[in-house]
Amino acid sequence: MSVKLYRLYCEICNWKRITDGSDIQDLMELKTSPIPRGIPKVDLETKKVVQPKSKDQIKKFRCPKCGRVVIPKKISDPQRELEEKQELEARKKARENEDRLDADKRRSSGQSI
Image (tube, rainbow, N blue to C red; front, side):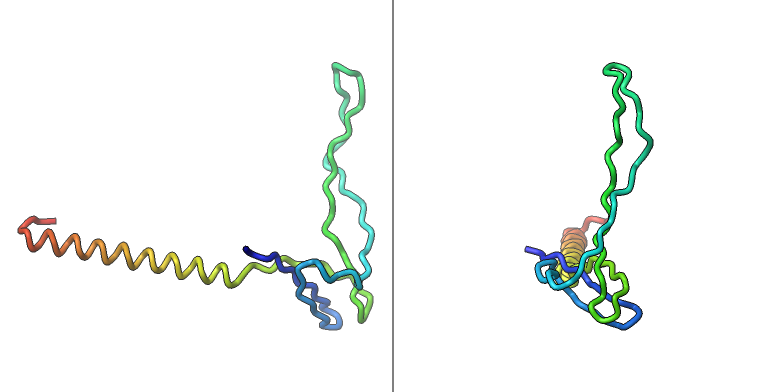
């Protein structure tokens, strides 16, 4: 099970927090309005105006030290990435070993590659 981690970092005062989102109650969230994705269109069948869905903005917080805006950045899971890399290397070595064994069998039986 991988946990999503987020980094909150203020470049002005160097305040930093790594969180999974459960301990941000002490931070003040700034209100943001949704971003419109296009212009309203008229539905020809119903003769009503259809509003396009809007896109929500990223949550923004105030830095507890200096009060500037801090935006959370997603942190990749380094342990999972390391495990995937090791697994790929193990598969590659296993394939190479199988290829070597097959080549040895062919040589010993007198067949050419």
